[in-house]
Length: 107
Image (tube, rainbow, N blue to C red; front, side):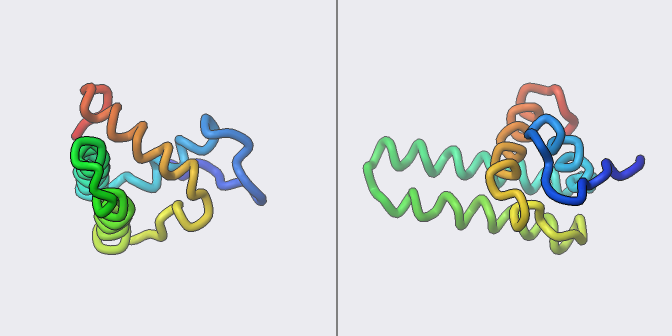
């Protein structure tokens, strides 16, 4: 599998960025950890809505980034795209999550 080329500056669109995002998540364990972390982020948000406890909002980035960075540093052995593309990486996390839970991408 070849690496999608990284442009000199920035990706022009999320559509152009997503193949790079997926390549950076080639390791199955890393992808699984991302899916679990994103699921926990969604659960924390639902708990915030139910309880109105703002601590759940604080838990969201801690859980999300915590799981994702463990996946990258220990399994994928690469630097998370979040550092250079924070919004598109977040969008990629949710797209990966929904593709996985809908069965469109292997878990």
